[in-house]
Amino acid sequence: MSEITVNLPHCKYSVLIESGIIAKAGQQLLASLGLSDMKDIKVAIIADEQVFNLHGDPLITSLKNQSDGVYAFSQVEGEKQKTLERVRSYYDQLLSAGFDRSSCVISFGGGVVGDTAGFVASSYFRGISFIQCPTSLLAMVDASVGGKVGVNLPQGKNLIGAFHQPRLVLIDPLVLDTLPERELKSGLAECIKHAVIQDPELFSWTKKNIKSFLKRDPKFLSELIAKNVEVKARVVEQDEKEQGIRAHLNFGHTFAHAIEATLGFEKIKHGEAVGLGMLAASTLANKRGLCDASVRTDIYEILELAGLPTRADLVSNKELIESMKKDKKARAGKMRLILPTKIGEVGVFEDVPENELIPAWDSIR
Ligand SMILES: NC(=O)c1ccc[n+]([C@@H]2O[C@H](COP(=O)([O-])OP(=O)(O)OC[C@H]3O[C@@H](n4cnc5c(N)ncnc54)[C@H](O)[C@@H]3O)[C@@H](O)[C@H]2O)c1
Ligand SMILES: [Zn+2]
Image (cartoon, rainbow, N blue to C red):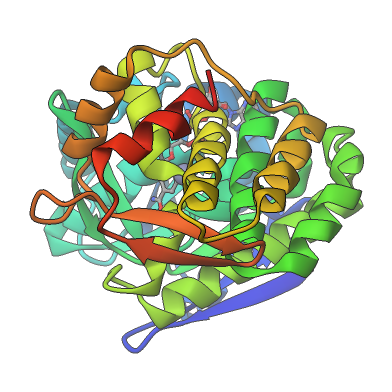
């Protein structure tokens, strides 16, 4: 088992990575709550329906061994479900089942369920205990660590939310066996991002082993998850509320959000858009003289090896740039871009004129 600790000034929690760990969720939860017994503690599993059908039994059994009040609520998959209406329906179900301040919520699924369940836990009775059990690679290496929770509004993605750190994160790499291939690759894009922003050695290691990840070799996947959780955890420890270095995790994302918003979430996966966004950002950085052309070539090659797209059928530059300006990461109307200076290092730039975005977009058409 790998254990990574996230140490924040107001709380500390473990991320446990082990094959088969969902069958021990009850014991791990009991230990993390610091109780001798949790028979009277109510536990709600908020799950992605598909994931629950595939992998829910050992989780339920293990929790029922510890608590007499285990409830499972599930939602059909998809970003469209990340809404306040869905959150409201969970509040109703928790209230009917008698959940109180001592109760807890476990998310079981990808980032959609993690963000939604986390928001429920952050706001129900002003905040109850929350456990993340991520089942997509993207949620394991990114969404489940760091405490950002929330839902979408019709006006935009992730506009409503909170910081609510989990008490525990349980990662079972075995569940990745059933993850659709496109989703696996989408998660790999966030791993590539972590390497580009922080660590040239991680970049080379990721590149060298990419075929093993795609073959879902459990040993390599466990190592990949542990190395990436480590990157995310260390960034969050330095800057929980994204006032500084945590913004580096948005590398590629201002471009990615414009791609997602203009093409639609059904057409493109988040990680695919992030891969394209990293390419566009590295074109821009190179043209500004911030980095060598080799940075873009390195990112291009690793994306190709991972089977991620390096080009897309995009809308006009004008529409893309308008969408970038609306991104919530823009500060006081100024677009903030994270641009690479070399593999393993990025910086924040707020002075990029619009005309410099055009060749960046053209480089991924
Ligand atoms: N909170 C954060 O810090 C943070 C960070 C990154 C992304 N996010 C959010 O995460 C969401 C994207 O997460 P995602 O990519 O996991 O999407 P997702 O939750 O929609 O899951 C992707 C798909 O994979 C399926 N799936 C998941 N695990 C599976 C498994 N083990 N076996 C079979 N199928 C499985 C799901 O049913 C779904 O169809 C977005 O809403 C994004 O905003 C949040
Ligand atoms: Zn992302």
